[in-house]
Length: 372
Length: 92
Image (cartoon, rainbow over all chains, first blue to last red; front, top):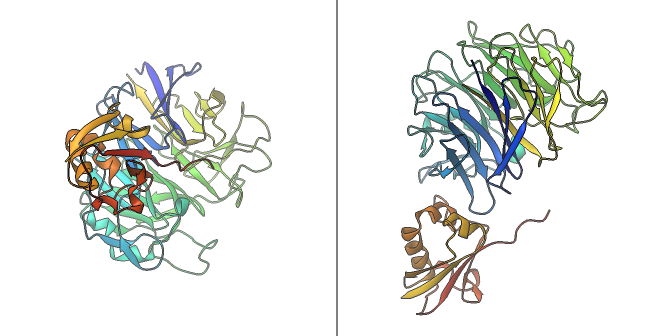
């Protein structure tokens, strides 16, 4: 039985931690940690129940990863991910260039059977592996040097970056990653070899009439935490569910959502067919004239329901790609953070919402820690 | 050559709050190399993975920005002060 929940809120000016009992009705705001510095993503490690990994992409001192072993009370700086000298590849611009570490976009704890393995996605796009619980990092050249890298183009915030890491619930060697704009790649051997997994995705809004093996604009990809082969994503163009039997993506369709576009996506912790997204209008990247709302599907994206009870009516909001998450409780909690510095929480799977925090800096990421 | 290194703002924080330390070296670069031996937490904050000084760090030798001298190859003399200053690079 969970005793409490912590919501890790990465912002433009530091990491905040929101704490509540399992009731999730009253929230205490702690922080900021790394005050004044952008925290692009922070993740809790459920395997030890106490580690937090934070992607700090600071101007002064450059990008770094901070690790806490005590749920944020104290922090230690990890050795940076580093590309070996001589590593070249497409990083934007014309042709290949030398790859050097610019930013961390996502940090993901590894599979439960590999308790010290942690993964980090970076800009320029690459996947790094840690075998010491996040304190040092090694490049996986099979992905960063993939022959299709030449098809990758600048996507998120003008860089080519790896922003999503989906570790399979059953097989620690089976991992999918999302790259902007490179598409989805999958390894089944722990990261040595990779293959594009983009069959089924459409690109009509940005590459009409083109059938692409790779190079798709993926916005946020998640894996189910306990059931294997379940993946769900919000892409530049639509919602997609992974069809493992056919090794392709099934379209979520349009029914019930106001826009195909958006960044954030979260999956229900106990139901493989339920997911949440936050649709945005293009090109302003804000919720439409109806105002902010989370949309929920219970049938792998075929139909969607607007979930806005408690949210301010007609208020435009923007939620970034890491800006929404679910906890592991039953009923599941759903959370999102906005560019206006608010964090909204639902303790009843999205039916009703309450403001858990306000007047924070612009929110870049939301993660959860379900504590026992 | 013994020189003083002064750390300002974020760079003092990266060194655990140290504001001034003393190292030896013949050039600014050698002084920085000696600095990260005594303060390893500064290594990746001062240089990137290719050993280049970070973009938003200003290194001064006494009153001069080393970018306008000989960079890290600038010779130092006994009693010189090397300043590590976060560049004033915000404000949008």
